[in-house]
View 1 (cartoon, rainbow, N blue to C red):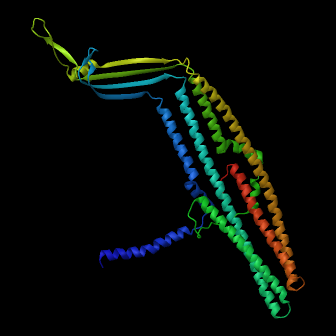
View 2 (spheres, rainbow, N blue to C red):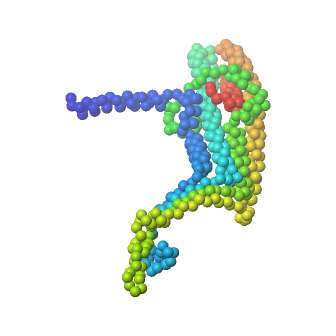
View 3 (spheres, rainbow, N blue to C red):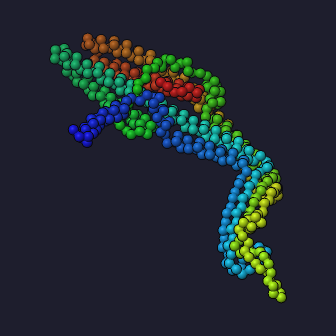
Length: 460
């Protein structure tokens, strides 16, 4: 067997393995943790916020670089036609070429600490951007958790509905035997079959709701929609959640010190405060120091090397060599520069007044964010307490309806109650279970949100 045929066979053998491996991965159920991690890594809004952080990092670096002296060099070569300047600072009618080089540096000695405060302002802006990034992560985590719980809720509804249809099918089978034995009227059998049709329609509606909730989570994760997508059903006891119902004031005191939306506003306030100091610094004089070096060469520069022996001697000229010009033409200077703002259309004063307005507005924004947080936590706490009460009440309702149904079922099998009474009792069990399922997941979700504000990671 040649190498080419051998390679083809190996490839044909590996392809099914690869497809099987890929299919197995795509059908693997997702946990809440894997959903949250994937959403955080791939969400577009989070990526955009991460870019804002990168921008803030660059701005901070630049503000630090601005503290160093600048250094600039220049090299030029020019061609002059017609009249051009000579080394005697006069003009003559001749073409010339001129080459020059320069080097200069300047450093700010004092400008009201403007540059140092700019560094501080950029640091606070970066910290604010980092907190905004954390807020974006928290928001997507909460949205994923809500979608995940919605799927669990719909799965339980589907399961409960299937149980109901199964009981009805068993009852139809029993009724059919009773009709064949002549101990039950066929009308009762038809009533039970009609009940089954209604229950199957309800089951179909719940299955559609489940598919929509799965679609919602897939779209939230921004993954390709597939029928194989599913989630892991965790094991948890809703009765263990009571310990999380902390006083709303305790939760607020912890949240106001740790929540990223509050920290972001606090850092922004500090940044605006520094910007106000920077604006005020523009009202004061600034002092800078600098140094520069300059040199040039001109191909028409000449010097006297002697005189003719005529009655009226004339100077003998020759071009000045490059090295000699470079040696003689260099100029160096060191300087101090004091800039005193006197009148610039009151621009500096207006900027300072506006910066003070921005500072006051930022203080209001921070307080408004704290007020919103307090209202949200108070509402979340009230919802959690209400959900707890609803959960325990619905739990008792399920127990009562199931006990009543067992009693009615025994009487129905003895022919004492009608199918209508039997179906009514069974429907009450289903309604009680549906309410219980809804109350359970509402209770879980409300408590998890309260934990979220308390700085506890959302897990199931």
